[in-house]
Image (tube, rainbow, N blue to C red; front, side):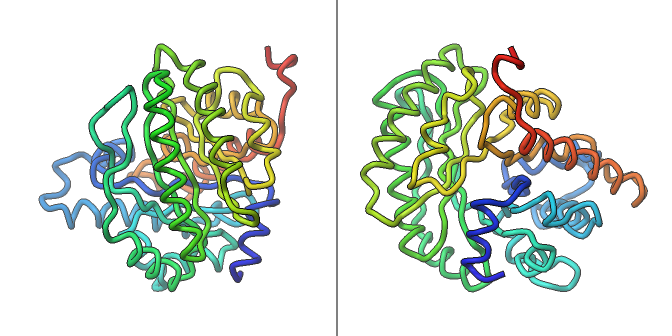
Length: 303
């Protein structure tokens, strides 16, 4: 797939995006969920080796194909590694899966009810290296905890600023201003976020597009204006702490939104499984998330 073929697949493909981008801070928790206890490694390199082994097992599984998984978000070390003796992005592309790269370097401390992204001084170099490896797009995450308009506006402005840098490098940005699903002001956060995103979309130059990765809204169909916006290539949803059945049920209530799940995709996988057990569990998870992404229910039916 060249860039235009990847763009077409992400824009109109049936399926979802797998998030395989757990970074340094979340890797121990991801490994623990996979059945690998913290004592199984003594150095950071060994820890990343174990998580890469898990990701390689997922990517090489016969259950993981471009038929239902249209994209995958990678951690930088995963992108730079190999799967089955090939560079990871190439291994994905050969399976019909469009590769993305997580570019943010973590979050600043909370101010005005939000956490903006830490500076990314080496972003241009990372974008250049990623594009050379065949990576289609990027993903960057901020967090919104409270319905503070000043804070949410700052998050969205920063996201679009970085997004324009990504577009300038010839790649597709996934903008991810995550609303904490445990926020006591979650519905208000959703509404302010919608308004701020629309402002920034309208300010984008003609011909430029972004993708959006959002928490599933309290009010189904709230993000319809974003799904229909000409400057949005695709809207995807994070699971945000929901179990897979919960996340898929909420996802099915929102037309045009596909999944980009991490924990909800991996929650039933264990290092100790046989290959048959592993492939069966992964296939079942993929089928369930695919269904939530492609078979929608009306909000009246869902209520």
